[in-house]
Each structure stands twice: as structure tokens, then as C-alpha cells.
Length: 403
Ligand code: KDG
Ligand code: MG
Image 1 (cartoon, protein in one colour):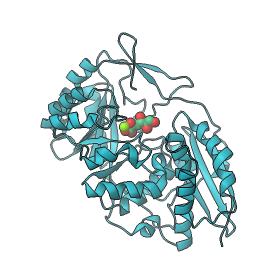
Image 2 (cartoon, helix red, strand yellow; image 1 turned 60 degrees about the vertical axis):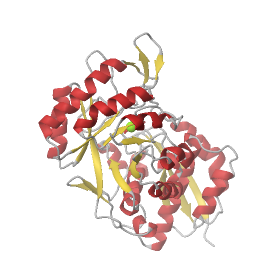
Image 3 (tube, rainbow, N blue to C red; image 1 turned 90 degrees about the vertical axis):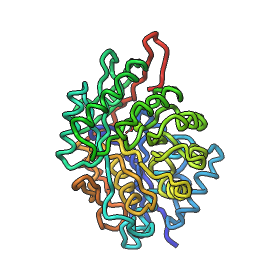
Image 4 (cartoon, rainbow, N blue to C red; image 1 turned 135 degrees about the horizontal axis):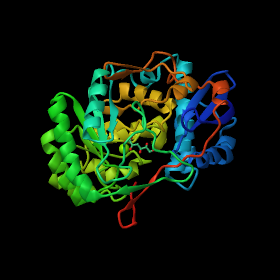
């Protein structure tokens, strides 16, 4: 018998807020998990501290599946971003412990390498078309083979994805949500012009991606997908909100632009029809948002039957613990598509020592046992929690819209 002796939540803000779980055992081995929920961090902290940790003490950390089922079925109130992040934090810490005990990098424990490196996409964000094209050039110079392009739109204040620094983009910027403006017709006219220019400047080789960030109706999304077809996007992401999975049938009828969705999904049930009806090409669910490795690998296996590939969310609000775990997962998962890689701030990287590395457009998992990411608690203590929320969006007449 092996036992969990202690579990602690560490909240810190090295560049942005992170919620980290450390699980300790009677054998001296510990594991680290991420439970960060952007703008709602303390809800996960309470879920973990008040409801989950007391149930973990004394359990055998090797029984990952049983603990997952206990936390999912046993909660009665299933699913949702808070619950599934708390479960993910535990699950990832337990996989970390198991892989360390086995003396294997996590990808080996999962079934071994399926590929040499993990194709990633970076973020080129510009204030206008010229600037965005320049940013795409910068990413190409760094070796990226796939680049997401977002641009400011004339007349639209705070269009989604326009960064404040060159290397990373952090939308959670204020204790109370910043109000941004949205204008669908300006965007629908603008977006094809952006990609026409990017293809003209950068040629056909580089993979270009774009995030609509839930702003369109299904028929508008169908039209945008069609207008973007000449520019051969790798994907068009989150074209319309996906609470109603059927909405994607309409988009699919109108365009061959590949579709990606799912960074806000929590379980397979959020994507079941999207996958089984082959309404999407890439699934954006990731480790922290979807109950950890245990659930995500089940989802990936289901998706593989329908030729849907993974495209894990990897924005800066997913801590290095999630990114590191994702790189191991991506190294193994047979139906891998691409991994998002929005670089973290240097302070974040310092607080979370890790052994994954970027080279020539790919991320490479390290070979240390476990998922390869730790937390420097003394350094973390120097960056106290600082409340920040994501923005909201309104239309020109003042109506609330989807941010
Ligand atoms: O916390 C919200 C961000 O993770 C999200 O806005 C980033 O859409 C995003 C993406 O594709 O990275
Ligand atoms: Mg997105």
C-alpha cells in the first residue's frame, strides 16, 4: 500500500495567476497538477481545498482511474469548468507520481512515442494588416511552421487576439472585465483581406490558423469559411458558440475550411455529436480543462474513430504544468494534429522549471521521469495572487455579445 499524505494548493501570479496542486506521498514521491481557470481561479481553489483534498488523504495514489471515477461520479454534480479543472489537477499530479515511480517520462507510460516532435503553432497578433504580416514574419524567422494570425480591425475597439507584447498575449487584464466592442460585418469584410495579404507575403508553405472566438452565427461562419478557402487555412477555430453542437452542421454544409472547436469543453459529452457526425476536424480540449490525462485520452480514442485529430489549447493561462503534460500526451497520442504554444512570460518559466523545449517549429518532451514540470515554491511565494478577469464584448448598439 502506498498513501497520499498531503495535498496542497499553491496560488501564485508570476506574470499571471496560476493554481497548482502538489500531492505528496508516504514514499517521498510527489506530483504536480494544474487547476488554473482564467478569471475564476479561487473557485477551483475552494473546490479543491474544501471538497477534494480531504477525500484524497490516505488513498493509494497508484489508483488513478478509481480516484478519477470517485471524483467524477462521486461528486453527483458532474462536469463544468470548475469541477473538471479540480479533477484534472489531481489526475495530472497522480500521473506525474506514477511515471516518476516507474522511472519513465509520461509519454512512455502512456504507450511510447508516436512521433519525434510535437508540431506547434505560435501567435502573430498585429494592430493592423501590415503589423500582423510583420509578426508572422517574426514567427517564421523563429522557425515556426504554423502560425495563428489575429489582427486589429479598423473601427472595432479591442478586437479579439490583439496583443500587448510581441511574444505573448494575455487577455485577462483587469480586476473587473474590460469592455470591448464587436462588429460582425466589419470583421467579415476584413478577415479575408488579412489572409489574402498573408499568403501574398509569406507563400503557401506556412500553416496559417485563425480564431473567430465564438463571434459568428452559423451561417456567418459558413460564409467566412467559404471566403477563406482560397487561403487554405490549417483551421478556423471557434467559429460559433458550441453549446448547441448541431450548429456546426450548417457551417460544415457551406465550407471545406477545416474546423476546430473545444477549448471551453469539459467532457466528451460536449463534443460527442461534433465528433461522431464528423462536423469538426480538430478538437481543442486539453488536459487542464477536461479532467486530466485520464479523460482526454478517452476522448482522443473516441475521436480517432472519426478521423478527428487533437489540437490542444495552449494559451498562457494553461500553466507550464499543463503544457508539459500536453507535450507528453501529444508525443504519444496517435491522432495528434497540432499543439498551441503561446509562450509564457519569463517569470512564469522561472517559477515552473520544466524540461520541454522548442526547436525548429516543434516542442520536444524531456526524458525525466514524470511530466517534467515542477514548481519553485519559494519563488512562487514572491508573486501573490492578483485578481484579473477576461474582457466582455458588446455590439455597437450596446447589446452583450460573446467575447
Ligand atoms: O482564457 C481564455 C484564453 O485561453 C483564450 O481566449 C485563448 O482562444 C484562445 C486560444 O485559442 O488560445
Ligand atoms: Mg481559442
